[in-house]
Length: 464
Image 1: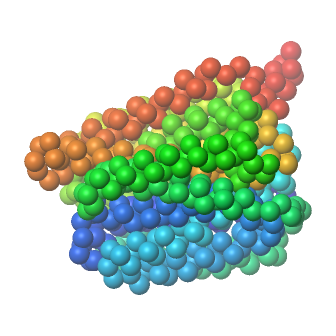
Image 2: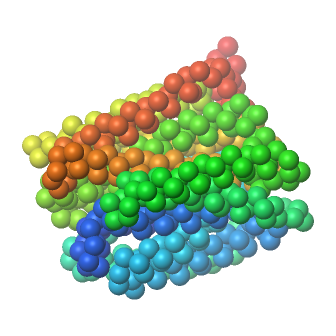
């Protein structure tokens, strides 16, 4: 069961990851077809993140109230409908609205899927379960650039969204037949006021960060919505402290390991979120590659990620969470920054080696960080913890995309010319450095932190 459950749940992660890499590879072609600029299409990515920011906080309550299994299947269906809407989009506005609707489905299926896994897995088996959960999901980045690049180059970008339909149908059927996870229902009332405040806080922050770096809209809108979002965040914190059952309970941050996993993971995801936006654009606009050529290079990072999954459990058992997470995040950030050293004279083999090693470290990091977050959190708080982790993940990814876009825009404005290779190089250096900071957060933890999940202490005892 430890393998069957995460493999079935991974259908959601597979669709989400493949969808993001497909779109990143095809942005220039989509922009040309609907009459806009590739950078302006970041508004569609932002709309997706805004939908996640609004609805992820309510995912835990929905799962507790109506059943996690039911919500998971409904979310897959909504994501599929959003994919169809994207495929029939004919303008920037319709594409943005379709991505928003798609984001609503994603906001439920990924955190609820992780919640189902946590509730059905003993803590000492969680690292292994998380590894199995992400193996099929990593096939998304593996197949996405290749399939998306091929379809965009030789057919039409509209086809890249149809690939989610058969996958989603299979996922709904498999969940209904094979997934046997005990349902935990709760009659707890919805913190509706908290939901509204959180929606303004997270969506305002995400949208504001994007508009600040988006040339298609006046920058004053970005600063205004960002200020509103941050103010709403403070208001939500005050509200949560006065509410008996808040939508997202900040008291969970009293758990040291949960707090470290969220903060460290957020720093690392800044670079991870920026790379799918920066790298395909750099290879296509800076190097003059086709979408298919770009995808054929970038897919190797997923190969490295899949290879590392078979070693992650043993690595964490041998070295523990703090040392492994610290090493993976620091040097993973260094490899992200190293992509800023690429130029047209860099051999393709060198580029692929850097991406391969980066994929290995990224995969090892996420397997451990996802498990560490639940090391000192009980089952009763699992749904809240899952929602908080999901919100933090999306905010950090959105921040990474916003930072990358802001650097590209600022660099081009300072030079007074269109995008050039040097603009991408600067962006890689900055986001890679931010990701590397996560290593220092984990290195400060005790060596045996989270040993009840990693098995590190048990291995040390056996050697003695």
